[in-house]
Length: 610
Image 1 (cartoon, rainbow, N blue to C red):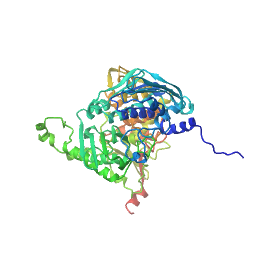
Image 2 (image 1 turned 90 degrees about the vertical axis):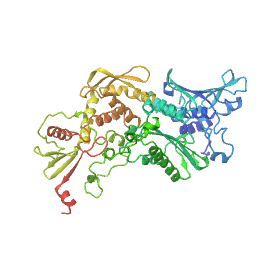
Image 3 (image 1 turned 135 degrees about the horizontal axis):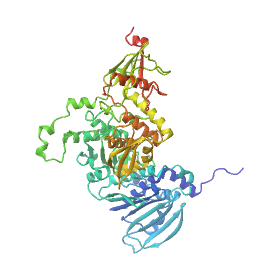
Image 4 (image 1 turned 90 degrees about the horizontal axis):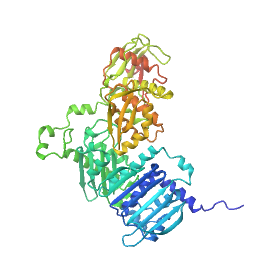
């Protein structure tokens, strides 16, 4: 029998390796930008066509490469950054494995033009499917231009897995933002389909944050800076009033490399304890510098997950540094730390975080007695709940913008096959949050917001299946000015928004006009609704595979539902109860939490030891 084990051909081996590094156009953007930074560039241009599917090009004015290096850089594990095993533990550069260009060349057509400052001519190389097609001298400026064309042209199955252009563009903007944030001293530009989305002049970190995340942070950043022999930390955190209900503008960098660390995020969150509402998320851009020998960056192909030699020291240091900064700048909603020092000493500016504010911040823990694990009716929450982020986008005591939003109609309770109530059941509102409804053998405790959200969700779901929802034109259309990142999200969801009754039209660079809203939604709050929609959509859990329209329906149901803290009339309560028990699935909200709990007589007696 012939031998079965054979060595893979180089081009196939390269394609397999490329699958770890180049998963989508944004992966190539990250690798190419990092290479440009490592080359010492002071100006880096990123050019994108067709969301990176047809072109990703990075042009830099860095050191350039010699003819030999230009040829060698496409070989697997070819790197200028590691010569001995010890070098692997002293990494200061962004790239180091020597896989990026080899991986890109395995799944795309690549054109490289490069020239060193001390050489008269540069080098042009064309690579396709890991094979060099052309190599010749060329007249080019100092630095390097590398163009990746027709990604996955030779792996059609991989190309089919790419998302829509808008979705892929959003990932590209994310990667661009992370690299540009790390190096504010470098000029970055991003041009997509011949339109410049970003032009980031070299400047300070604060200027770069405002350029990337929006001018609303301009006067709301608190400086963080602490230095020790073991590590340094610097950057900015947002004042408490900038905290959002979704995990938004949060960036950690270790030795200038963007990382994801739930552990360090928890350290920052604990520093904000009692300053922001429960389940809100503060903004931060924090840089940690420490000896590379106590960090392992080589634990993941994208290098976004790293290991620390001593995580507890890092945690304590981050927490202490953020706490110290927040205390030092006396963060209250009215304080601007750029004010004159004498003004900052005024009592009205220096006043602490008051009990009243603390009560408002903690008001989201409602009716704690009904969530104790020793009680028989407790429903254990799933930590990987299908939609945690939707649950808390509006939390704690917020009044409805346009009243209770429940039309006053039927005064009689309708009995359905879902309903355990009788037509003469008594209804009472508790804590402006729950509706207590008597039943034959006990009572029901209905969460008014969760129940109304389920009602609206099923109504929107039904309406969106058949034809676009009715729209009312705005007499005075509202204008939305978005950051480039949010504009990329808007392009992704704009058609689905129209199907749900929102007519939004482009109005120049990163600007949109809201021409119409759903016919049954009150006007005057359009901008706020869209802002929250964008925020939710950007940070929707990647573990949940919902369609765009499904995400938007869930978001709109959450936004338009009556909020906790809203007082209901008897008619409104009866209408809500009728609607919830007319639903196909009345017992859970769209995010999987219960809409009501039923307490039967025997259960109540058991709770009282009877």
